[in-house]
Length: 316
Length: 308
Image (cartoon, rainbow over all chains, first blue to last red; front, side, top):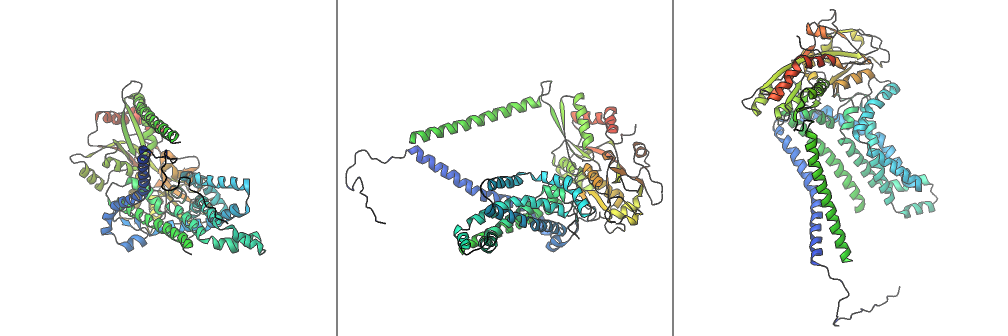
């Protein structure tokens, strides 16, 4: 394209009377600096709060670390914090409870979540797409205590009657609720990941004669796999940290489950149920904060992994 | 263009300032009018926290007492006896409800935090601890020995057939689902002490519910279940078992009469604790509770009043 030279209306060296450009007032410049400083502070406050919380939790739980036998703490299933004879603090069964409920929830949630993301992104058009997105977001808006209540009163008898198991508040009940809570997150982020795949991929596949489904599982899923994996990991993070729903719907029972219809107890529910009765500074209190640190570490690792995986695609 | 932006910014700040001032002022005035009763003076709050077993009773007392003494307002919270005792030690409540006595280490902690004072105990009634099963369960009585073997760690009973029950309509399998309470509950502590014993631990794997009502709700939905809760929480969907001390003896039904004459073996007194000697307004409330008007409410809500 030919370059058109533009003439500077006020050639260099010429004396100008009233300048055409506008001056900025003192107040505006000062005001802008203040607002910049405030925004800077807001950004940093996120980091400050995260470190502050970690420091607070660690400080409350740290005194117990001296008497802690890490192996017994992490792997023993004897959770007897209020024993009259010998208090035992083994969170093995609680860790198994958290992990088993989360993994079962992911087994249920991932097909539904990713399937919904693919459907909304690829197979849906216009009004249907908009309505579906809004309705899926509504699932995320339901408070977790309401989910817990639904699990306890509605799902429990259904599970007893459909699967012929003795008790309805169990791992399966909790996992179903967690799955329903994680699906909206997976759909939002998964849909973004699929949208990020350039249209040229889709056009090229169509040109090669692929069907829509072939485009999805042969081209789009491999291309968007990092984003989809991040979506799943964020869903996992949500499920691990969930408290109220699992407190009400899993049966709150300290044991290693034999089947998916056994009641279990999670780390989060233990803290929620027991922290109120401990007196500040007692052993039980400190152990509960240690469990908090454990949870913090698990979610931190999960989120960090999700972040690194998403970054991985940019490096390629 | 400069002039318009400055103008908008000024209006924005002005609006935010007015809104903030309005909320602040309305907040202040609301608290004044809320705290003032019909008499026009400020009401003294009494913070009453603790036992979930006693929470319905405490609320009934609070409601009735506002008519007796309009200058105080009693605020009741549940959370379990453990929470009430912790609040008393931490100084965040005036009266702690507890369905069990204070433990040695709790008394020591209280003395450490409040030097020179002792927690003062007031017995305000009795609660018969009922053992509940699903209403269709054919079992009618159970002994404390069998309960111990069911609920104890390494106990020998875990199936309905071992208890002599062969056919519960609607039950799936033979497993006994043990329903219990979470360990902030005074009911849990009392049951552990009275049935399982101080030397043994409770079995791992009981389904631990949050409140007395939740235990009964779960049992009403679960034919395989057995559990314990306060006598006053019975509903038509569950049935309570007669309890005998030893296997083979005649079981005793939990009622007011059998609790007062001590023939029902698992009844416990209910307590209210204050920090040292109670202040005059607290003492008036406690005296009212332990006298005729308060005890009448105890009988009406399904608990056992103090012996006359």
